[in-house]
Each structure stands twice: as structure tokens, then as C-alpha cells.
Length: 173
Image 1: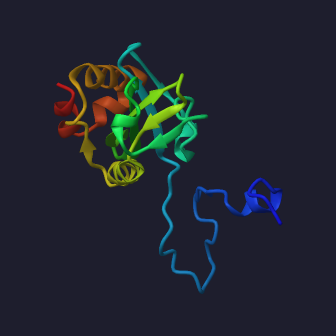
Image 2 (image 1 turned 45 degrees about the vertical axis):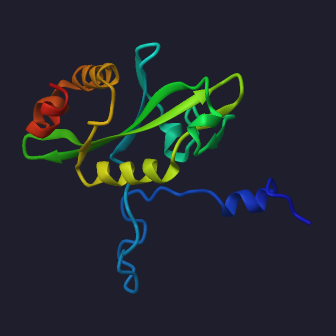
Image 3 (image 1 turned 90 degrees about the vertical axis):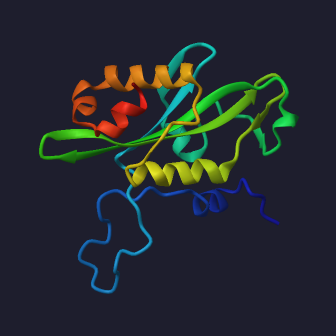
């Protein structure tokens, strides 16, 4: 009997991010069902310690915040959880240059001591999709977290910020 940790099993269960067009020129493939995540970056907002950082591990639910944590969908099971926001940021390019295209935030709580956390996976996936589609979904964030995120986006790359939509700038005004 094979365990889930077998190399063969692990290899077949990995999530693959499609980059560019790996099947370019293949006559029988229409390209349906593939998406490119190469222009997306996950940020983690920690309002308690007032920090924001890029954590690419979040693309696979393996950010530093999420590692070694069992997540549940009942907030009551994580009474001492520390709040975080996982923010999906998509960057695109237009004639003026690169810009923040979509920004969507998802809430989670983590209790390191109990190794438990609260998050709704479907919400995280839906917010990722909204970011890819150029939507701005930050209205559910608390003011402090939103302020930290806005400052990070402005400071990280001023060209991205300047070329961003008025809707995005208004969301952080």
C-alpha cells in the first residue's frame, strides 16, 4: 500500500502554474481551461505587527503564516487567532506602462500555539479570480490593514501606482 508521501504520488498531485503558452502551435488544443498566474503576487498583511510582505508560498497555501497550521471553517475553533489578510495583486501592462490591475483581499486568523487557523478556502480562490479579472475587493478590510496595504502598494512601485485605475486609488484614499 502506498502512502500519500510516496514520491510518485507527490509528483502527480502538484499544482502547476502555466507560464507563457507551453502548447503553442499544437493544432488540436484550443487553450480552454488554462490561466496564467505569472502576473499575480500574493501579499500578507499583518495588522497586529503592522507589516506587509510578498509571500509567493501563498500561491500554494504555503505562506509562512499558513505553514504547519490546520485550517477550519469555524471561527469559534480559533479563539486566540491573530488576524491576517492574504491579498492577491495582479499586475498588467498598458501603453503608459505596468500597473496594478486587480487587488483582492481574503481574511484568515492563525493561532500558532494551537496550530489552528480559520479561513474559507473558497473565498480565497474567488478573490484570486477577482484579482485576475481586474477587480478591486478591499472594502471588507479594517482601516488599519487597508492603510498598510495602500502604503505598501504606493511604496513598492510608484509607476504601478501612478498607472493604476482611479477606482484602485479611491479604494485606498
